[in-house]
Amino acid sequence: MNKFSFLLCLAVILCWGINDALSQEKCVNTEAEAAIINNDISSAKLEAIARAKWSAIEQVVGTEIKAQSFVQNFTLVEDVIKTKAGGVVKSYKIIDQKNTADSVNVKINACVEPASAREAVSQLGLNNSIAIFIPARKPGRSGDEFEETNILSETLIGKLTEQSYTVVDVAPTNVLTASVIENAVRSGNSMTVRSMMYKFLSNLIIIGKVDYTISTKKGENIGYGLSMPFNNVTVRLNYRIIAKNNKTGNMEILSTGVEQAKGLANNVEDAAAEAMKELAQNLAPAILDKIAQYIKGNTKKVAIKVNGVNDIDTVVEIKGMLQSIVWVSEVEEKQMGDFIVSYPENTLYLANSIKQKGNFKVVNFSPYSLVLDYQK
Image 1: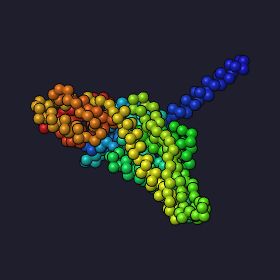
Image 2: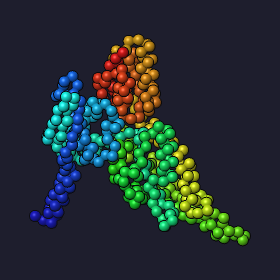
Image 3: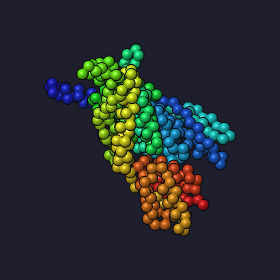
């Protein structure tokens, strides 16, 4: 065998080894419970197993926010499991099962493929859920210190929450550190951002880093025999707004930039705080505009067919109900019981919101269509 052939074989073996490692299954123990309805123990057991499988997927991915907290009606989550979990949970076995008068509890050992699990969980990401992590270097009495929750991040979270966005403050979770974010902002490291999206079921991330400089010190000569009466501090923010394009599945940089503001105060700490407040007020409108454009660009049309609609009053009632759902931007009536709804999120959430109204049963579910039974 010549040298070239040997190197070629070695490369192939190494590739196989790498692919093997990347696709290696991870086996975990999880448990879940389901209610017994109409004495149907078999159905309750199947639902409990489905819940346990999804818990295994979330455990492997390491999500900080559980899918169930977004979707109260678990039968809809099962539809996602049927289409996604089939290629994710490679095998499972029941370790234990406990039946009570009202419920079935199962404990399983499930083997999950991590890459597929991350993809499955990412399907439940919300466009209107925003993860924020903007650590700030600030002056302290004992020298410089990093604040991971600060005036800027808190102000932005408040402004976004006012607009009905779901905001996740990454700082308290200890998932990332300021140094990791600094490197991600400098290098454009997509893996860090993708990891945040998986963990927080968010399709939009705002990451950045705040630094400060003392532009003019209190008492410093500023000319003409005058001295500076206050400390003048400048704070600068390097940031990126990164979002997942639901049509292509790729991450896109919505905005990137450097913003700054100045603050005056007797001591350096207070001056930096004033500058942070000013920076937050100036930055919030621009960020809100970018997010609104992103959501508008990712809005899709969902066909909704409602069975059992046979009069105009019911059509008007259902149309009003659909328009009242959060993030529905438009409802178009096609014919009796048929509607086209403009919605920016996973159709799973739209189906769940409709089901919560109480008069509807989901008969058929797909990413771009819903069939419902209307129950007067």
